[in-house]
Amino acid sequence: MKIGQLAKSSGISSSTLRYYEQQGLIQASSRSGSNYRQYTEQDLSTAKFIKRCRDTGFSLEEVSELLSIRADKANYVCEDAKQIAEQKILDVESKIQQMQQLLNTLHQLSDACCGGVESAEFCRILDTLEADSSANKENNQ
Amino acid sequence: MKIGQLAKSSGISSSTLRYYEQQGLIQASSRSGSNYRQYTEQDLSTAKFIKRCRDTGFSLEEVSELLSIRADKANYVCEDAKQIAEQKILDVESKIQQMQQLLNTLHQLSDACCGGVESAEFCRILDTLEADSSANKENNQ
DNA sequence: CTTGACCTTAAAGTTAACTCTAAGGTTTAT
DNA sequence: ATAAACCTTAGAGTTAACTTTAAGGTCAAG
Picture (tube, chains in turn yellow, orange, cyan, blue):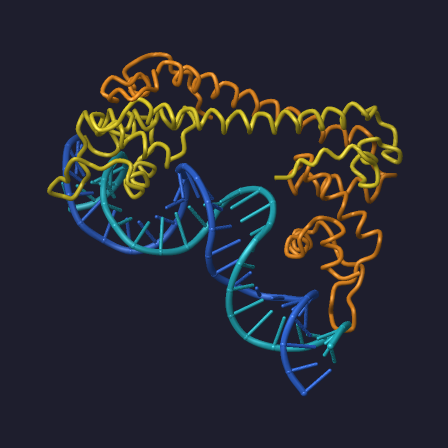
């Protein structure tokens, strides 16, 4: 099949597929006489695998690693694959924690304000964002 | 004070302060004879306000809005400020939900795999990422 | 035989929020 | 008087993962 068909079947756009090729994630099995990329059903499986990985939150770099393992299972062990997943879990957990922290701060901010049509002259949100007060939780990285 | 001093006092680097100026967030009150930016204590307050906003998760665009309100409180109401905070809360909550969803998927993935030094031949992670199976939660946007 | 839908490449644009570089001017301390 | 530590600008580079553009080649239908 040609790239447009692969795009439709895999849910990855043609230009993204070309980009992935450039990034070394997937190659066309061959080229037609007119230099069109030609893909096989196997390529479609690979494309779908990539799509799944992306939907699962893996970066292109991680997808690359997973593809390497997938392409040569005999020379890898479960540990290799699981390690990638676990690292990702740690990443996501850490991001969630950060965002939870942020959410707390935001709630404090919002809750402090009446939200009415009173002049913002004494708005607690603005006051809280002024640096003189305390309660700075250091959301830096 | 000069930009380096403001940078130290506010926790925003000099180049970032210049960038913020370019983005319309903060201006030097004046320029010295040698064209150096000169900042006042008021400017420092503004810089700290911006820092607080950023640490609280607001985008530069949102910070701009907050600065507008802050600069002209009489012509804004609490509602205006609170709206920004509440919108941000919704954004963050939505992102957290997405990440939680992702985390679930990742846990399923990880839990399915023994993680041992067995060949990856039958690794459940790879199997799960193959597109033929079900359980696709559509983590697309 | 031409229109429209496809395909090709290389390169630039997008987003956000910076950071860095180059090439130079100023200030301060010794 | 000279070196270090500051300051200036404009513009380019960074990151990730694409998307868009330009300029062109191919193919099937009517």
